[in-house]
Length: 126
Image (cartoon, rainbow, N blue to C red; front, side):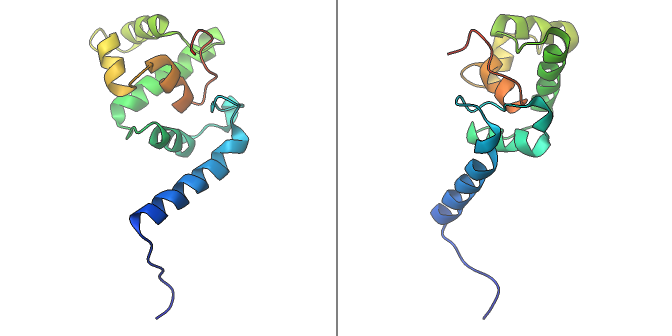
């Protein structure tokens, strides 16, 4: 029979990982952040999110938009406290909390969110 190949789950995972690495790697700096903000698009965001173990929802996209707006306004990616305050002012009090942002972008919302949003690594992040 022709046409359809059958791969194990691990083979598919390795193939997807290699494909993402092959596509994303030339676009990224040594820290895995997009070099050129203008190269960003929703597909790149989804690929970065998958690498972070995040399935993007409408709530994520709302914060990603805030991150990109912050960068446009101030020329830098925000630190966590600045992100919390910006989200609180532009989205609402319920979303503008560290706990909410950590639920969406575990670890460091500013670092992880900035990466997925196609922005440079925040200056104070390791």
